[in-house]
Length: 286
Image (cartoon, rainbow, N blue to C red; front, side):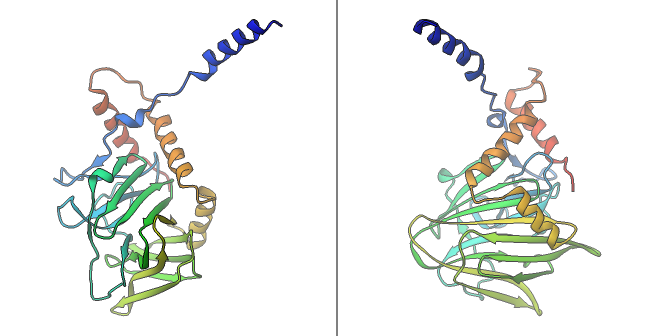
């Protein structure tokens, strides 16, 4: 075959297969969601048909101060659940709620991903999700002592620290109903403290010493059945620490599902795909 024919064949192949990139439907979606026409709209992180929702926990009705990042059952925007928060400095048990201003210009929100910057501590927080799991990435400044705080003050909970990188536990979600969880840390913590009230653990802080830009990831799975089931879900849904891959897979799931609904042209494209997104959010499987 002549050289010119080979080049022409390559061009034809690329024209057929290389330029058929699917549309990014996620870009049209407004992921800010409120409940019962509340004035406060939260950025929500989830996957289609997922069983958990993730969102920042604002202080009061303010969207300028955050006191953690909360895990919720799907469909319950203002429900109770466990949350994580990150701080720099020595943990002080007399501080009932750790909070920080956050810098919106350094943030990003989409259906499957949220990023913000905790201005008071200089920590960047990112989160994404799978069907039954959440993944956090904390990017710390250089500090002799930082803490990732597991906050259970809203609920009756039990937690067990299995090693310097693994925990599990359970908390009540109703009469004779429990939610079980299992979590892994990408880096061993050098120490931890369990803080109790009325003989029950309400907060656990996991202590790190970090260099500038050092990352610590936390992945956590939930189950209505048992801790063992949560551990199996964690192994099955998040087998490694590749945050970008998990985020990209979540975005691909949204694009696949949003793309199944044909745009009718009657509404603005953003409003149309936002409505589709909100309807998909409420569908899930235990």
